[in-house]
Image (cartoon, rainbow, N blue to C red):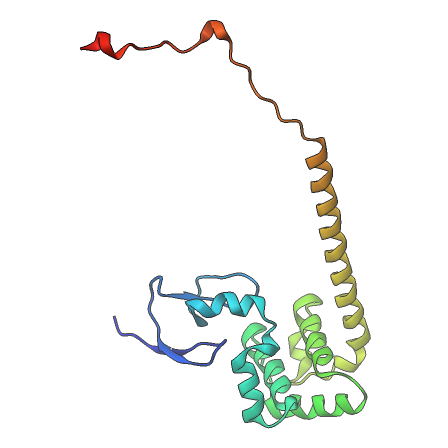
Length: 194
């Protein structure tokens, strides 16, 4: 089987893809998955999970190459729409829209999150996008509130779960069975066996 050269999304170094346990295959998200879309070095998978994507060495390198944060966020929006949402999108249109939105005091990450909210959460009609992200100003605040609420719900859930765990720990009684001396184990005399 021919080995393909791939680039690790975390560190950016190229390596030969092996379809065995040498390299772990991972797709966007929090879980390691066996999928043929993205290949990470085995040692990079854990680092990628522990580090926000915007702090990955390869991401920072792309910012340096692109020359601006605008280009990186435009590329991220474009990738999300074309690869994840399977939409037709125009990079230059998205870039120009993001540039206009930032002049209206919108943040890059907020714009990206709004795009994700529109198509991954609200499942808006992809055809109406016409290759761009013109919906962002209309749902920017709603998306921001949705992400805040989601974070708070997750925090509340974790706190409630920890509270229940502590309550259960305090209420647990460990039972030990007492041995019935009448049902004791039979002793074997090794001297008699010879």
